[in-house]
Image 1 (cartoon, helix red, strand yellow):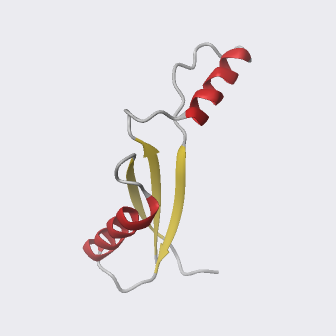
Image 2 (cartoon, helix red, strand yellow):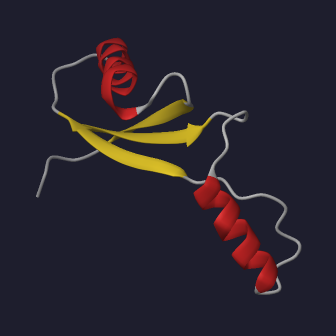
Length: 87
């Protein structure tokens, strides 16, 4: 089995009000050395055995493009991790 860890974040040019609110709150709490906050989404996709890395890459990209990330506003990246069978 493989685990795909997918990270989705807003593109640099997109305003992220939630991240701005967190950043302002951190400043009020005295964490002035924190210069920027990024807020995004994280997904874990468990993929059954039997697929090559290329097949998994293709499938994960399709899932991200069609469902997990909004191409106009967000970027994504992922990492594949080999796992043991579910317990």
